[in-house]
Image (cartoon, rainbow, N blue to C red; front, top):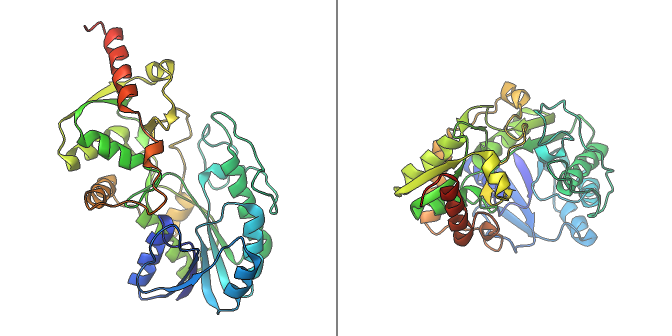
Length: 343
C-alpha cells in the first residue's frame, strides 16, 4: 500500500504511521514540522494545509492508494484539501469524532444517529457551544465530513468517529493526569459510582482499524470505541494504582456532591461526565468489519511506561489544562470530610 498521511507526528496520526511503517507500506507524511518528530522510514513533505501553493505542490508529488486526514478541523479547509487531492488518491479516510452527533453526550448513539448540520465550506467560527450539548468542535467536524463526502462521494471515503482515545502520546492529558496524580499517593477524589461504565479506545486500535478500512475498502461511517460496558471507572483507577505502585486512597464521591461543589466535568476530573450518552456509543458497524480493541489495562500500563520514559508530545502537551489542582483537591476533600461529619 502507498499512503499519504496529513499530520502524522502527534497522537492518532503518529500511531497510524508507525503501524503502516511496521507493515512495510510506503508512507508519505505532510505537515509543517512543528508539532513533533517524524517517524523514521517515511517520506516527509513539508507544507501547510492552509496554504494553496503547498497543496498544489503536494498534489504534484505522486499518487496514493489512500489519504488519511488526521489534522482536518475546519470544513472549508478540508474542502480545499479534498479537492486538491481528489485526483491523486483512490480513497480518503477522515478522522472525525462522536461529537458530530446532535445527541452527544445526552443520548446513546449509533452510526445512524442524527448529525449536526454544517456546510462543507464553513469557516472556523461556524457553530456554537451548548452546555451538555453540541459544541463548535462538533459542528466543525460535521462540516469537515460533509466536505469529504462532497468531493469523494460515498464510494471513495471512510469517516471514522472515535470517542475518547487514550494511550501513549495522549496530548490532552486525561489518562496522563490520573496516572500522575495516583502515583503521588494520598487521598484522591474519585468520581462515583465506581461501577460507571466507560469505553475509551486505544489509539493503536484506532490506527489499526483505519488501515484495515483502507486495505479492505470499507467505506462509510464508523464509530470507533471499545464495546459498551467493557470497563468501568473503577477498573480504570485500579489499573492506574497497579501500574504506578502508589499508595493512593480513592475517595469515591457521588456525582451530586461533586456537582454541588462546582467540580467541572470532563476537565477537573478527567473522563468524568454524568450525561447519559457519553459512554453509550455503539460501534457495532465497525466491529462487524473487524474492529478489535485491547484491554484497558494494557492501555494504562503502556501509557505509564511511556510517561516513565519521559514521554510527552512536542509542543502540544495539554496535560496542564486538565485535572484538579492540589489546592482545589485539598479544599474538596475538606468539604467532603465536613459533610461526612469528620473532624
